[in-house]
Length: 148
Image (tube, rainbow, N blue to C red):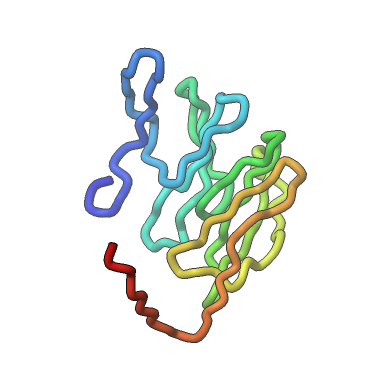
């Protein structure tokens, strides 16, 4: 990161410890299960123009699939789940698209979400797991610890 923007996406060879810069800077990068591709967010300004981008690890060309961010691969590697910028004030729209860039569809609104806890994952069964945030009564607690 450089000034809050991705400067480079690095690939580290765990066996040798060597690092090489990937073909383009991606944020929220995720490896495909077969290790042949990386899906990530190509950050653009303004933010709504950011793209879900899939790149071949062997140095082949990167391809923008759709607008969105926070990609996650399905367990079989055929779909990429992601968020799309939406008008939801307290959540995110979860979408999916094929790795070929076709069949984009909305899955569900994940709401309410904590403003800094917008994380999700997808189980091998296709079920989505996420933390639903419900604001409660504000309280401050004090505990007296025994002096021992």
